[in-house]
Image (cartoon, rainbow, N blue to C red; front, side):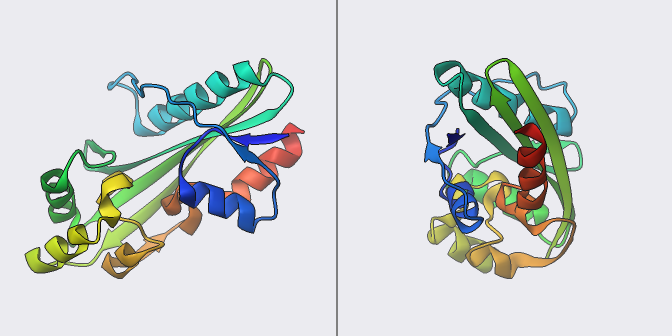
Length: 183
């Protein structure tokens, strides 16, 4: 059986749209990682923690763990704490380039395979009114960097270079290849 160790409706939809049969079992771990790690190592560690935690409960099943962060300059942007934090992030990213990293880990028993995907994203210059109106939709509140490219936040994006699904939170092509090799 395939298990997604995530409550993300976006990740579940991607797996469903890819035709995979899976169940969802969130890891419910407190996400603590060494802040000194490089962003790509940080998302891999978080993805591994989630996958390994759930795999310990299901040693005969393949578990997918994933984590996504946005990096602007030297600052790692996770999910906003509140609307003010969402505003701060969107104002910072307005008119700028940033990198979205998604780490993925596959775990079965003691076996783990992990990888990271990175995509460069350029946001349009966004006015304060546009930021406030977007925040009022509620969409930014559960998204790394405070925007969702697959929803209303897509209108904030000027362009990107790399994998769209990395920005959404699960690099599907890379995951499907890894699952073939893993099994």
